[in-house]
Every structure is written in C-alpha cells, then in structure tokens.
Image (cartoon, rainbow, N blue to C red; front, side, top):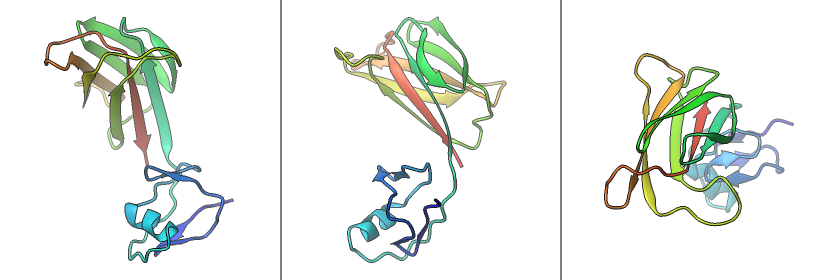
Length: 146
C-alpha cells in the first residue's frame, strides 16, 4: 500500500508519523503532521521510499549492530570511521550518544559527523565529553537517503 501526503491529506490512514518519518520510510513535513492533527496545510510532499542505513557502535569501535555497514574503526580517542555499502553523499546523517543495549546509560556527551574525505560511503565520527574533551563514547548513527 502506498502512503501519500498531498496538500496535507493522507491518502492511506495506516501510516505512522514519528518525527517526520512515516512508517513506510517516506518523509512527512511538519505541515503534513499538522494536517494529521486536523490543521490545514499548504505543503505538498510526495511519498518517496527512503533508503536507511545505520550503525550502533560501542565505545571501543566495535559494531554492535547495523544495516548496510561494511566496517567500523576506532582511529583514536573519540575518533571513528564508519563505512557503509552505498554512497551517502546526498543523504542526511544524524548521530547521538547512547549505549548499544537496553540496560544502563551512556555518560552525557557530544557526537559530530562529517563525510569521510576520499570516499562517498563513510562518516568520520567524533565523540566528546560534555567538557569538550575527546572521549570514547558509544553512539548511534542514522543515514537517510531519498
């Protein structure tokens, strides 16, 4: 079943919108979300299947789990190289501090992402403590491509 949002009207009601991402992988604009709440919208968003790859990385640089990940390397304190099986040059990248499991919690921290120089399928990830010092911290990355 295809899910479309056109001028704020949902063409199929079984879509779940969380943070602008529909359950079928398409993006919904914030205006589309308002339309779902009964507010008018003038946005037109076509459903485009999104390709998603992700990596959940332990603080020692080992891959806990992922999709489309070809390798992960810890390069130094708080520095990681994450490679995917596809080009991510035209995609959105997001990262956050977090443990790989369901128990416990990671210390508060900061994650930065930048495309890896010399390739279109990699991210250079840096993690820091809240004081700004480089720190080995577990993290999650999500790459969404249209």
